[in-house]
Amino acid sequence: MAISGTRAEKLEALATELGDRVFVLPCDLRDRPAVAQLPEAAEKVLGQVDILVNNAGITHDNLFMRMKDEEWDDVINVNLTSVFVLTRGILRGMMRRRAGRIVNIASISGVLGNPGQANYAASKAGLVGMTKSLAREVASRGVTANCIAPGFISTPMTDALTPKQVEAIAAAIPTQTFGKPEDIAAAVVFFASDEAAYVTGETMHVNGGMVMV
Amino acid sequence: MSDISERVKKIVVEHLGVEADKVTENASFIDDLGADSLDTVELVMAFEEEFGCEIPDDAAETILTVGDAVKFLEKNTAA
Image (tube, rainbow over all chains, first blue to last red; front, side, top):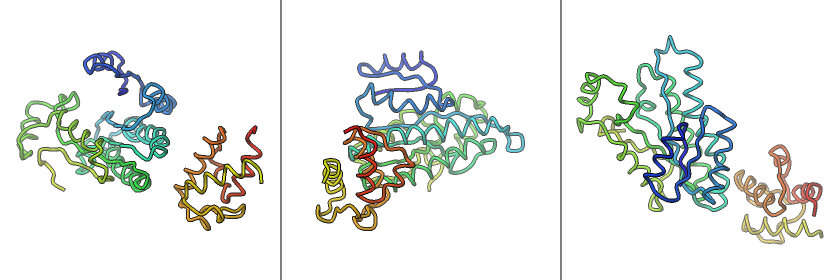
């Protein structure tokens, strides 16, 4: 496995925790040339890439009327454009081998919209449409592409919420709780499995029943 | 018939699963050999691997027939 992110120390710590054969490939997804080189770097250390999980995402929330061009561009670049560039880079090998799994982490925000998140919601809804188009193109070659749309999951991203907000949100979730990162990981494992070969272009909602579509 | 031509035809036959006698110089991948657009991209990838060269996208777009591929590869590979 190869893991990538902006902070090398955090990646190294995770690699140690995960054990052998974990390669750390730090990359800032704002840096387009660096992103373009990442697939090749991953193939070099891994031999080949059978599964690509595009999980990185950022927020720069602001009301639509106040949102700056940079806030828009930054979020679209990291959350959507980097996924396009990474996937394009990895696709050739998957097509040749007639096998591959691409899993993109979208968001409930891209499905429902969310005040203050026009950029984030656009990037995540964009992922869903991009994934469906890709899925149609490559399905006949044994490559699947799917999305997961997490609801409210306890992560540093939701740590920014006040206790009062957390309470109000939890009240609107049928399970009454936030999800755990492991809940998302389980969905990734399914899409990445051989058993999910007949599932493509799908968006799996993992949100405690908050939205049922 | 050149060696390059033979190798190109072999790749086309294998990839598209067509009869070898249909793979003539003038045969169009899409119109005559039943390829779709994704097949043409994969054929270009297969040519690149077989001949160890790079076929840029703008050149790939001009490779529509078996003969086009042979001509391009004859010109651009140091065989």
